[in-house]
Length: 140
Image (cartoon, rainbow, N blue to C red; front, side):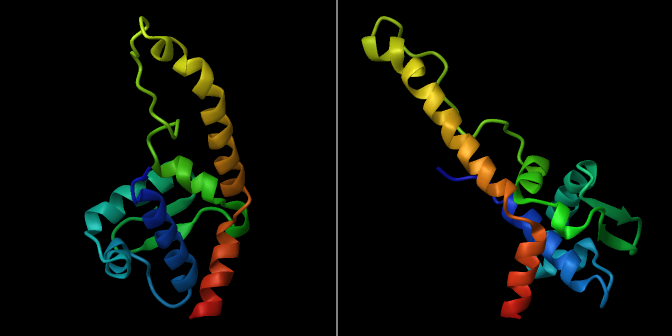
């Protein structure tokens, strides 16, 4: 299974905003250079983060800023802001009900997949942006 890169790009954006906030204006072009991606992708993700109340964006070359303290932003907040799907797993919807496996696969798997998603979300909710900022600063 592979997720999109939106979570990692969004986290990269937030780490840059926090790290460079006092030394330069953090614009979409600046962020795109750090991420090595197109500024349009950065602007789209910044828009999602802004809609979720995680960042504030000043028009023009004003830059981006955290809307909340880094200790109040978790990986789960970031994930929910940028990922479109509510469920991690996409179960095939129309198994063959004439087959004994097809008839029972949902009842066997659904609860287990929900537990896996809950465990992942719980772990993400325990990791703050502040923790990641500290780790990055140790490596710089």
